Image 1 (tube, rainbow, N blue to C red):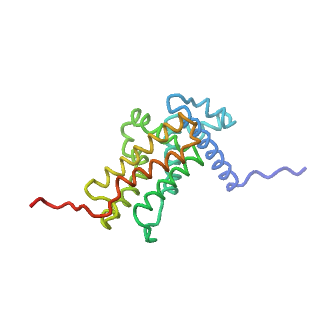
Image 2: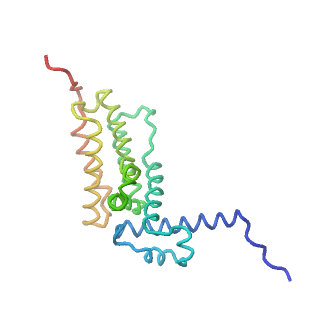
Image 3: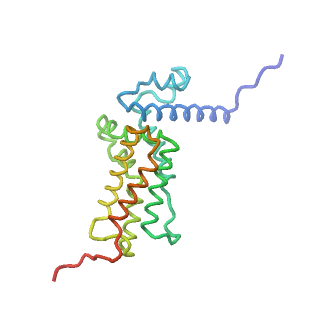
Length: 217
């Protein structure tokens, strides 16, 4: 009597990858909603529909799961914030486009919020991972800083302020808008609020005339 052939190694590998993907997606949703402390592994297991054995094969602890979620979301953010600055777009407009892409990515996949909720908790639990985890928060600070530096060189963005500090302030402002939008409308008005914020920020950081950082005579 013929029997089904055992799954090929390739099929087994694909199944493992699919299971891992399922766990990461469900964990990101749970962490985004309830944070690290408010999420239990039983919550994630129930949400994934897996047995405990299948789950723990991939992630033996909540801490390891959270770090894996941060790494996975970091890859998604990297794709979201990648921009070609060689297309001749003026720096202020490119900064606006970059911010819009970040907001669009968050609006489309609200699990991305998990990074902001997980990183502080994980750093508190594992200070040794601080450099790796903090890098996740800089994923769009660094590109914004690069755009601002280009604008300062070109004279389209004021150069009397430090580019890094401007980028960090933009990041902080958008984080605040995101939090308020979540409270006010469960995130439904995030795009509009972000557009208003960016318009105000552009007014403050652009300059028709280069200020220069000259030594006083």
